Length: 316
Image 1 (cartoon, rainbow, N blue to C red):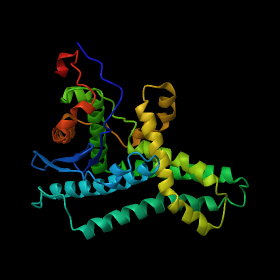
Image 2 (image 1 turned 45 degrees about the horizontal axis):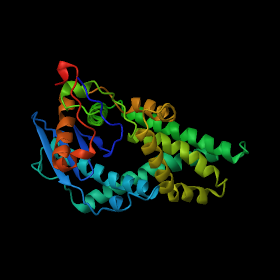
Image 3 (image 1 turned 45 degrees about the vertical axis):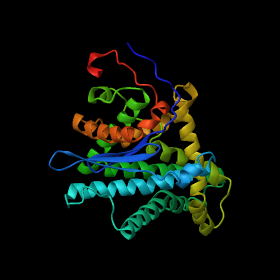
Image 4 (image 1 turned 90 degrees about the vertical axis):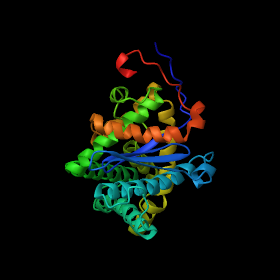
């Protein structure tokens, strides 16, 4: 017999696929599980600062989105560095910490590279159409289309790399595990495998949302000089991220609503580029990370969906 879990998700669990592993994040803690080259699972966890800026700004719409995005970039970079250390088996399994300067440089390169590739490059390519496209709105639609094309091409190309294919599989395992928790399922490999590999709060959906919102926001600016257009793509990025965050959270909260499903459908479809069906060993890693987060946040169990007693004997 099953007990219907509440649809109200009071804790928004998140995560990220890393090298041969998964990072999971709750409200107060983050855990990283990595499959060591020898076969065992290496697990690291740490509390989140309760006074971090995103917590203080939780009640401020739009601003909280930009702040949360930055914090996730930092946490994600630390998790990625940690997984790399484990895979290199350099004796630092117990620490995800690299020299602060090294992580700062890596983060800066990633942010600058992302802005250049997904925002500045499409703008430069669109500028070649200025003489034949009169409408500012059409010009921004063209820029958005190029931006989406660059994003799809980038994801498709890196997805050809064997190591990235495995990251996409861990990405699917991350989504399935979060879906299982939010569906009130006991975390077993069988239960998790039945869950979809897409999730409405995925970063891929977020990127698709950013492209759509950027068309509308940048259309309001017209077509000033190239210098101002480049500057606007950088300065307005936190604004667009804040709007996109609210959109993603609202559609995820109302995922059972037909309208919410329709408007989030493009983002869910594009997740096919960045997720793959995981195997049971990869799911075990994702479960290990989530179990650790749930253990560290045991006092918050009332804020989670109630655990369902499954009707299928394989799910017990």
